[in-house]
Amino acid sequence: MQNPLTRLARLGRATAAALALLGVGTGATLAQPRSDIVVGMAIEPAGLDPTVAAPVAIGQVVWQNVFEGLTRIDGEGRIQPQLAKSWTVSPDGLVYTFDLAENVTFSNGVPFDAGTAKFSLDRMRATDSTNPQKQFLANVVSTEARDPKTLVVTLSKPAANLLFWLAWPASVMVEPGSAATNRTQPVGTGPFKLGEWRQGDRLTLVRNETYWNAADAPKLDGATFRFIADPQAQAAALQSGDVDAFPEFGAPELYAGLETDDRFETVVGVTELKVVAGLNNRIKPLDDPRVRQALMMAVDRASLVEGAYSGYGTPIGSHYTPNDPGFRDLTAVHAYDPEKARALLAEAGYPDGFALSIKTPQMAYATRSAEILQAMLAEIGVTLTIVPTEFPAAWVDQVLTRHDFEMTIVAHAEPLDIAIYGRDNYYFGYDDAQFKAAIASAETSLDEEKRLEAYGTAQEILARDVPALFLFVMPKLGVWDARIEGLWHDEPIPANDLTSVSWRE
Image (cartoon, rainbow, N blue to C red; front, side):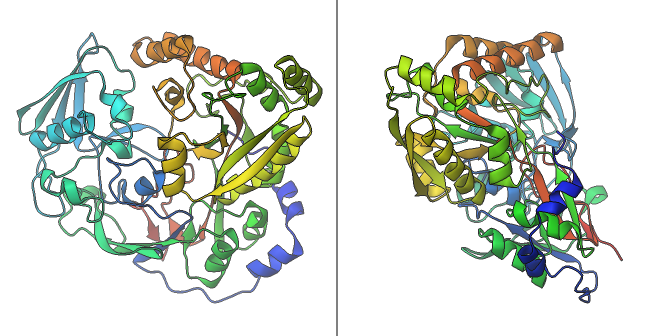
């Protein structure tokens, strides 16, 4: 995914006020290199166990830093071995045999072995599991600890994405004795462990001195995560030196000013952050595909990206990013056409439009996007009322769990997560047999060409039916002290992996 704006165009948008705020060219004296780092995040996680709850902020703190998985995803999006050194797959794709790393211990001193891995996977797929991705293991028939270093996983049908799914934060390995308390006292096999968590302010990680993987031991002694929701405050924290890095900077209108300040490195990277305006397909008038299609045709995606995210971002026509395998550009399906949208509403029985409410998380991108959608939908007679909704707690309760909403907006951050539209009772309330069949084919086919064709079909079905308004992919607007090395430039999975981070001398 390439950012559609040139550097010159971005610089042209920077206001004098922004430049003054950021203090460009102040020539301030830089601090000496350190062995710790302060990382800013917009959202504070509600807990620290990614195996029991969905919000991505959890993994952004603990994945790879505190917890590790059998496999991992690297900064380029590739699957790499981790607690599983290697694996073999039977010719029919039904049996995975993992050769596990030896001499691995959790931060509390308990050894990791095949029994621990079996426990972790069985806990993830248990009937009473609250794991947000438990459906990934729905095809698992059995797990077997053949010996301390050999784990065997047997499937009922092939799972082409299994090694990818096992690399997600939701699939990390947990120590059985600490599983019940990982939400506040996480215990993992990673290079850091929890130091202190001052809820509402900051969380500190300290080096795990007994970390098993000496070859990949961290260069930092510790890290502090600061939770700063307001974009202007994020800029101020960077400017003052209170924060060393914002891997996901939340003020795109100020970003061009940061690009001209040689104290900072700025990187516009790609992400999996698909901004969609979810529609409750269970309720009238949103249960009518003509209404949903009309809403999509009322949206000028290019103008929305410009207004909501200062032009940074790529419009999308389905729940898929240009980074994903088999991507199809479907923005021409139900393209911007207010006149046709009004005619379609009239055909559906709403010649005078109707009223909707949109539950909007407090993140700046969501608020700005909702305000622009409000103006655009008004052009076709739809009155949109914005309802601010605290994220994650209130949003998860009202939208994700109880489906108490008409419309909402959120960035779905997980990679290759198009299958969420096929989940029973998911918040969209979308149920289409053709879509489910396409996803099943994509996830079970061992033939790559057939697999990508099935993903293409799934994209096209969503673009046609519009269970959500597909808006744009957010970029990773990274900004950090220019002397810092090792932070991810792209974001193939939501993460703040600190394992390779250091300061230049």
